[in-house]
Amino acid sequence: MFTTALAQREKTEQGDLPLDLFAAIETLKQELNAVILAHYYQEPDIQDIADFIGDSLQLAKAAADTNADVIVFAGVHFMAETAKILNPDKMVLLPDLNAGCSLADSCPAEAFAAFKAAHPNHLVVSYINCSADIKAMSDIICTSSNAVKIVQQIPKYQPIIFAPDRNLGRYVMEKTGRDLVLWEGSCVVHETFSEKKIVQLKIAHPQAEAIAHPECETSVLRHANFIGSTAALLKYCEQSPCQEFIVATEPGIIHQMQKRAPYKRFIPAPPLNNCACNECPFMRLNTLEKLYCVMKNRSAEIILPENIRITALRPIQRMLEMSV
Ligand code: 13P
Ligand code: SF4
Image (cartoon, rainbow, N blue to C red):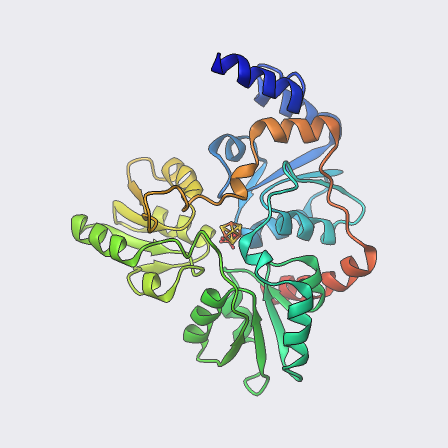
């Protein structure tokens, strides 16, 4: 009964799906001269079929460098939007156009324009997890892997607004000793980790190292042996002599950690409740089936008004220049 219902749903929502989706996607990739870029938070199948997997900065660089005609972006909307800003002549597809981001949503354009107007003479450094409208109002974009480096390159006398993530902003303040004006945005996933449960895990696994993404709250970050972007966390796990890690970020990345260090143990940091809310509900909207369907139908394309695209491009290019 359930299988029939499921098959029915696939037929109506996604058409007839081939039995070997991996092979069908490979064929479409050749036909379209497409490249599949995937973030570490994507489901394992998508990570396995991607041509390139990376953190936000690596993916932005890959999007800037690709010769493909079509970019299939297995990530969230702001990431695909960044790829489109960098590649106006390419088709950019997102497996599910509803794959947004709570952090980007926490910074609406109108309210941010008023915030910016209330802080004249401030340079705006925005985390890449924001809409094209916010990027267009920014001077420099940063990601979690270059935020500290970028702020350090700005003259000390220059006041700075940092948006939209307050937790990354606080982390950058601590690392640089700079006083930043923070926009009070946050990520629902990274604010779900429980300090108490992480401490309990550390007691239960005294050999384990805790590693965390800087989008986590200070109360969690203070228990971390290492803090970094998804790519930095991955590299740290590979290189550390430690055999066990408590991972305070979206658990999709554990697929790569396990692949690169198969004999090590990775324990996902627990959320506050017994929910699965440490999984990003937006990233997880993308599935292999949807990826196949958007490639087949050339649907779910990212389209941007040209004036916004051009204005948003400048701060992204500045980031790329400042992070070589
Ligand atoms: P990274 O910059 O580490 O890829 O982070 C992206 C993100 O969305 C974290 O929530
Ligand atoms: Fe956005 Fe958080 Fe999901 Fe990253 S994990 S895409 S910041 S909601």
